[in-house]
Length: 87
Image 1 (cartoon, rainbow, N blue to C red):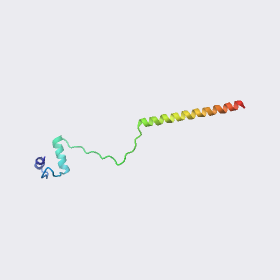
Image 2: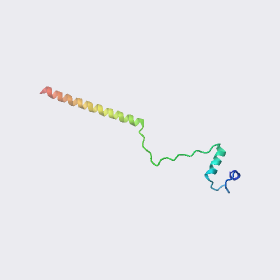
Image 3: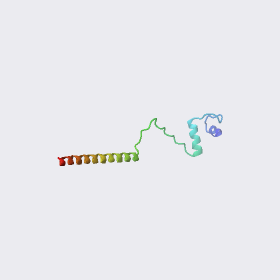
Image 4: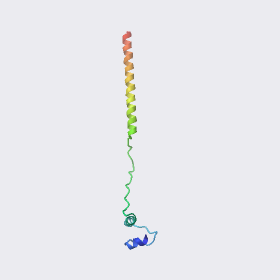
């Protein structure tokens, strides 16, 4: 690799030498046929994403709560009606 880089006008003196980005790109292109794509950096923070299963669970929970409230209201109405009929 040192010889290949030197033949292509890159300043490399020994295998332990550090090389520039251009030399790295050249080597990647030479051996792979194309340069390695740059990886995008991950953001320092991530925003939580609502998963469909969580949304569905929340909807089911809300529906169950609404049904319980409806039943409680019906029971309360039945008690009031019974109290009125007894009077």
